[in-house]
Length: 557
Ligand SMILES: O=c1[nH]cc([C@@H]2O[C@H](COP(=O)(O)OP(=O)(O)OP(=O)(O)O)[C@@H](O)[C@H]2O)c(=O)[nH]1
Image (cartoon, rainbow, N blue to C red; front, side, top):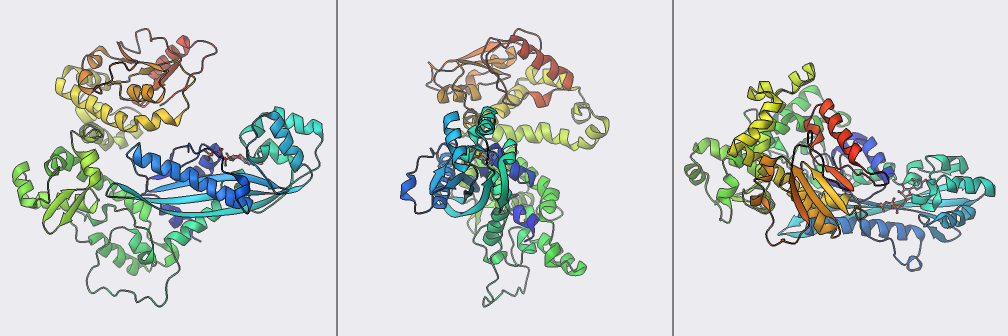
């Protein structure tokens, strides 16, 4: 099993881990997987006696956890993930299933049961591949389980209680953590250690390999190409068997040639010929992740330019439109427009038929400039502001300083003032912050349990997009948005309609200079990354000074 290509299959996908377990997050992060964490709200209350074997219970619970997240993201968050991973770990001893202890007595009951004996640890895993077709969520579920045998030494009552008082057992299946103090209780482990910790990584990789590299069917007639075949991804090049894979790979910028906009499949040609030239074997396949990184900027820029030209607005609520008509309306060259439209179609942003180009569902939802979930403002900000800054990344690294002077001919502070002096720049900046905050607000609000807080202050909370979501999710929370007077003066355009009673208050001020409003919880969302260390120190010190002892501070950065 070649590990890298297996995990590489998930690189271009929106992968979601439906688990709050820090151990699972760590295991998957350690192997370089990039994923979003959306803890499942599924309550682990399935009737244990209805399962013939303990592992069936773990697998079903894992599946329900993942299904809950896939459905919630699709329906409530309007963001369909590509892959959702759920897991559930249980301990089985004497035909009994042990989960996480509810209190110290329960932990004692569990550990006494395990004392001096061998038991099994089962982790059930569900991998759900999601597709959105006509706004319907379609899912393909793969599940499996792994068993590991663990034997405890004979342990004294005193030691058991000392262990329980350490607090470690409380969030662990069977009441122990083999990776920490609990390791001292264990005489032997037969099987996958990480399975005990919460995630059977080895089996997971094998499962991915089975899914993405199914064994070649020898009686299948392989196509012989007379001409260059149309390919969607680099993976098609590197994986002999991927033709027969059940899973559609994400489209990447593979149809852009060196000029950035040709859909002739030139990348395929050069990739293939170089593979032949250098004699790459199946063991040293093309480095698709690296190639995607090299070409990724072209895809971003194609999206930015199409957004800037308002092509998605132009196609909204229309049937297919020919390139020449779009070019005429937008005022661009026909040949350039056609190439840009082809690039957008190969990136999955537009649909192309012989009748012309039309928006995909997600372009209608996220890329038009006036939709409820429009990302237009953020895209324009990324193009006009972030792109020039990132062009100077090399100088930033060499000099260790911000590059606003190079990108825009002004220092960062002056530029920030400019945001608020030019109405147009201010509006663009606020639209950018609003669009990304609005879209992600529900996920941010539900990623933490904030129900214990009565009041919150969103520092630099701009239009209040996150604040409005927080008060929806936590009806007892009162949120104050604290931002510069120039921002607060212009928030009305962005306020949700029909929520007059929602407890969101806006207060003007400069968080570096003025007193901060009192609150139990201070939120710093998309704020700290913007400032040098000295200023961050000033801000965090001010927050620390106003926090009252005994109240928790949660940081959403
Ligand atoms: O040796 C160890 N054994 C078990 C663990 C941790 O125990 C929990 C198991 O609980 P569960 O599978 O229900 O997962 P949760 O933590 O509740 O998160 P979900 O959101 O996925 O339900 C798990 O965290 C293991 O990592 C351990 O750490 N060591």
